[in-house]
Length: 461
Image (cartoon, rainbow, N blue to C red; front, top):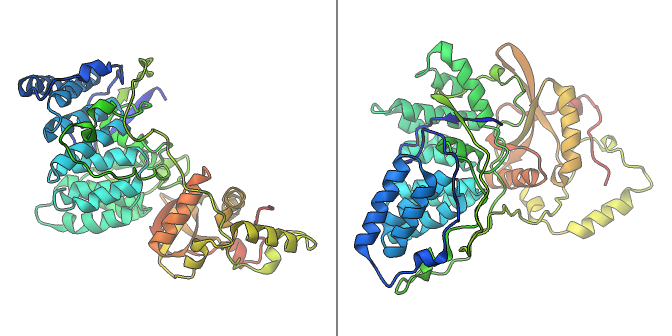
């Protein structure tokens, strides 16, 4: 892409946003730069002031250099570490940002702005569970309008709506709160409600353009895409902040040793089935959109030793889920002479899969896999999903017709789960490279081709 579109959402606690960042310098500072003989409050304050000015001018490289120097000269100052986290965010260094902001929050647990930025950094790193945990733990210090949207970005638009709905109905509610609610509806797949809420603050002649941009925003290719768009920055490969700056490296600072949580799968494509003509999709919240050029990443200096977490997104082990197939027996195309051998082999490989037992728990949550032109196209999509995702092979496809701007579509899903089971299944789908998102029941029924006696595609093993 030659340009990046920034959507100005209502995360007021963020210090970033506006002009695009280009030419970001990262990890190019010598470890000797952090060698100090002790706290130098005067030097730290001077460096922090310079970092603040650099952030205001969106000079990311300078901001990082000065903020790191401020922390080096006063390691236990929570404000300086928060400033460093902001500088890393401006640089697109989300791993480093998460480390710096976590250190800051350790020193000052009551700073809601730091907690919010930490949650967003975790989202950008693919650590959904960690982001949601941070938001829950700091609910009292993060405004509902910001916390709700952050939950949606962290893969839980249902909770986001639960938070933002009451906030949007208050007499003091602002357009920012309503637009955050509208976006959360969109990320939950509830496009009609999203459009209705968005139209409260967006003129009819502008709403359709917003729909296209929201639909694009809701289909990230990488874990960091949405946060990078919010901040209007370019993500870069990042090994973490210099180890010399880590809070647990400072003399006299006791920090409990906690093993880093494994990173979850990337942000899911909340509406994976939106047609290429996204302008036909009904719903998005009204937000101002500006275009900003994005330059190619500059060659990076030799990286120094860094602390803690690596940049890779790590998935859990891909254990197959063997579940009873609920469609008609004749739907399976496997030859009659081989099924016993194949079933025995699969069972031996996967035998005790806890998720299979959990499937017995009924629920109202569904994993949406896509939205297609019609049921026949959705059937082809189901065949592809079952070839790629073993956990779907024992599931009965669900579907429903819906209309948007005069066009008809067919949603493909599987469901009837608890929220945890639906989230677990969606993660397995994402781990295979496919798209999905979790939502509540919305009129889903057994897919048309199953009810009509058509073949249900089950991939050969």
